Amino acid sequence: MAAIDDKEIDGTIFKVEAWLTKTLNQLSCDAVSDVTTVQCKKFVKDKLAVLLAESYQLVRLQNDKLRQMKVALSSTKSQLIENQEWVISLQEQVMFCNEKQLRAVESKLLLKKLLKLS
Image (cartoon, rainbow, N blue to C red):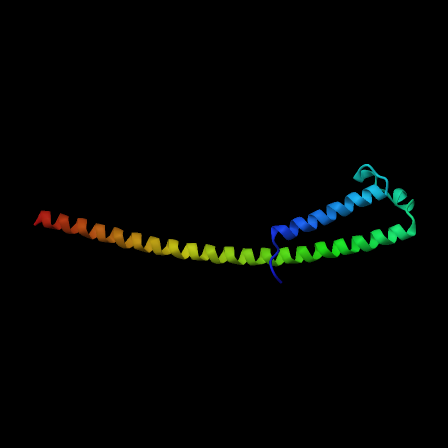
C-alpha cells in the first residue's frame, strides 16, 4: 500500500467538511449541536437514503486513508529505529577512536616522563 501524502489528506478533509456542511444545511441546523435524532426524523426517506449512502462512502474513504497512514507510520517508525541504531554505532566508533587517542597521548606523556628521568 502506497504512503499517503498531504494532498490526499487535505482532499479527504475537504470532502468530509463539505458533506458535513451540506448535511447541516439540509437538516436546517445552525450548529453541530442542533443535529439530533428528532431533527433527522423530519427528513424524508429518500433524502435519508442519500445521506446514508454518502456517509458510508465517506467513512470508507476515511478508513482507507487511516490504513494508509498506519502503514506510513509503521514504515517511519522502522526507519527511525534503523537510524537510531546507526547513530549508536557511529557513537561507539567515535568513543573507540577517542579511547585510542587518549591511550596514545598517555603513552607519549609516559614516554616523555621516562625520558626526563633518564
